[in-house]
Length: 360
Image (cartoon, rainbow, N blue to C red; front, top):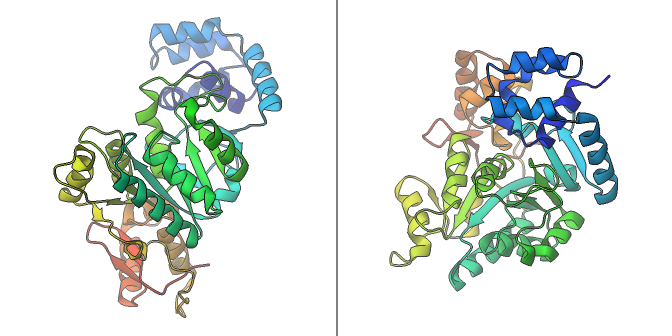
């Protein structure tokens, strides 16, 4: 008998979005047991066209074709209930339900990660900054997360990979669709030395509405996001917005006030983003390899809090969700850690580890 997991995959293959699947998740147990009942149940949350799409679907054929594609293209499918589903997605709004992955995602997720996004059309200044940032991150053993787009994305990911680092490419297409085609070499290098990840099923083409949504995955997988050159209406600013909503630090590279490619980044700085001017600006997030750990006089709860803060779950609300502790308890422990000089407040309910603190 087919399972809820297979039901989620079938809906993904039919083109249902994560948001649509979340709406009918409680009805999924009846999908393969009693499809007629399932169709009746989902009417309250889905429009008639979507209900008809399910009614007409041949799920057996869809799942069989997927299995063939997985064997042929060597990709993995993860569902939100799987043990290997990235924990980072459990703390964001509208998390992806089904993920299609090529490469070794687990190996990259073992590292700290920085999201880098920016303009497709860029200046020589933007290119130089992107390369410098990526190379510096590799020196810190930090992976780069980006969207494999032309311009700053590709420059950052190539600089990382050429330096021997790891990188994740988050696609707005199916895992088997290389877009843009000019990045074919980058795609295969990411499969070999990092990972490709997407929530869109095999064969999905580069539709405009895919890319803003995929940006929430870039920010979710990153401890912070750096925006390098962006026009005022750039999609990179959507990634920055998602990062802010997820409680992540946002850095913006300042630029010429007369350059259209710096309008977006300068606006981010005006609105409170951290300014990136040199590698040391990242010290409070990504520790230098030479930095020694301090001796910590902490109990198990405090150690767990520090681990989550180091992973980007750095607000009282996020820690509440993770632990199930009452907000008063969370605030008390955070205050104690601050008094001990182990964490410091960023002034927006966000905390970071103090310099010299390393958590195993």
